[in-house]
Length: 372
Picture 1 (spheres, helix red, strand yellow):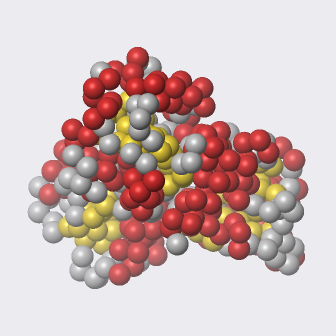
Picture 2 (spheres, rainbow, N blue to C red):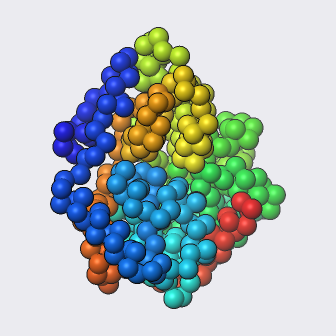
């Protein structure tokens, strides 16, 4: 079965055949490149480190020195001695790594076209315009801007400049609690689902949550609606997680299997309401590791993570809610990582401008401090 067939494969929930997926979807040439990558890394005596995001394929995860979610990998930067860091992730992650890196470190992104549609849903021009509207409508309230890690360096910089912070799905609740301790209302961007799912979990009523459409005047709301809000949610989303829908859960339950459904907080609220557990990729992986052998675990997140967990624990029943691939993560491949570690090309280097980096670093470091 080739790689294209793998991603087009339809999963049969009733027979639980997900574990029958092939474990070695690489060509002989790619396997040769993997061995050369490992040999090259060894020859550099610790001067290069590969960071692999959870959503990468098995082989890219295996050649990584560290595998984790965006928060875990960001936190690693300050503790890494290596001067060259290859980031097997997407652009905003590599930007964050550069922001938190030392002056003698260089971040390499094997494919600089590996972006994030959700991060692109909030531009600095749009944010500045919305901020101007909100400060005019809320002159006597302190607005705290909180941006999800899945955002551009410019958005992070804005948050740092305006005494806000960055968050991830691992620590969104902690960061929001901090925000309300220093301000009155939160502007949360760019993922409306992570923001509203976290706010609801914290007990903030729906009547005090509004989704702000930056394409409309006042986000499509009246001034009184905005003045009543505790959290103002940017109208952005992750297509990987909004692919999941309630009817998928109903179909699963109709199979007659006794299952535990775990989903990522970027999912739609109607899916969250049907889940048995909601959390970051770290939460999901830790749950799977501690689960009993007779427990069938259905996971609603990016397919590569689910596949790798099924491989790692072949005696456990781990299936995806539906296959949902992040095509931008898929832009990172073995030949490009091979080129990165063999040549360290200048065009793979990620450099955030200093005028943006300064305030973005404030927002990121504030997140790391809150998470302690």
